[in-house]
Image (tube, rainbow, N blue to C red):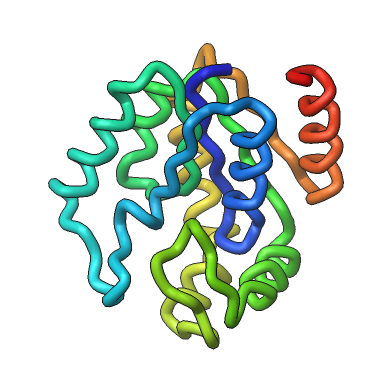
Length: 167
């Protein structure tokens, strides 16, 4: 496990899981949201984003936190391990709401309230994004170690066990 992707619905806890995995393994951690979003709420161009992503791929080890389905095929080709936090929508919505008003190292601004467009994206994730991710993983994920968690408890248990193993 040297090149790791962490994916899942927004609010599932990808960044929290990634931070803990980074702490346990020492693998460098990169947040796709920090590559894409700017503090003034503008975004990087696809070319800028892809250039930064290519720079990460030059490294021998990494954890990449985030979905960004457009780049999923290239990231699947580069990684050796995929963690998918496949939680119920209600859990993800609670996760999103719990971060209101909190500064985070994985996002360049503090979310204070629901962004209605983003909320609709999240609500549609199980029906729209999840099938796309499943299809891309079937197509490009062969030969990769894929670990799917269906609850926060499953992820926490894995991290506890990994902490002992990596010691």
